[in-house]
Image (cartoon, rainbow, N blue to C red):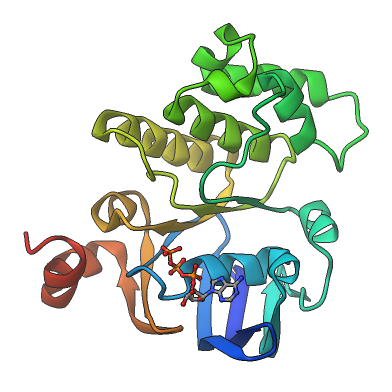
Length: 245
Ligand code: ATP
């Protein structure tokens, strides 16, 4: 039998400030251990979907007004973002959001805010094994390059020991070479650590190359979904999301 989904989003509707309807019956499912891509044009509602799952929607006056989010069978609607991190979901925000006047190690410790176990120090070393360059950068994180900041943001997520990472546009602002490197790491985290990943991307080609399944959103709904390899060969997807090649 197929593995049960780790994350299930069932027919959710999301509004901002009680008036602006942004998600209009969105459903998706993320199997345990998989990488799933969520694609779509600017403004389709991809970031909103991630925030509806992580609880961060609340911080922007947004709310889920219909439908439900389930993680490992448990309903998450209305639960505070901190509690959701404790349950094993960590969102890596768009634009990285690292603390620029703290060091790498201090930023990494922030990711472990839910933990009091003695493994934190060891996990900082583990993050440095994934991102050796960060170990050498002992100054303030604000001086890191864009790629290094993205790596630090992913490293900070790892510090929470998540079961599911919600990744919002990890390729944003990075050179093609760094995009390759960051996606290589995403694949590795999934393979080595078994972390399930829901990946939002503008770079559809890259996202479909690491994902096993993909969803395409338009105006707050899923308009197409399927195996990543099939989507990459789909004529409409090629024309609208893969630059016609
Ligand atoms: P992008 O790639 O540009 O981030 P997206 O697919 O992630 O696009 P969202 O950021 O989820 O889309 O935005 C979806 C819609 O919701 C947009 O029309 C946006 O203007 C609106 N929106 C997003 N955040 C808020 C907010 N805090 N208050 C009101 N409207 C918002």
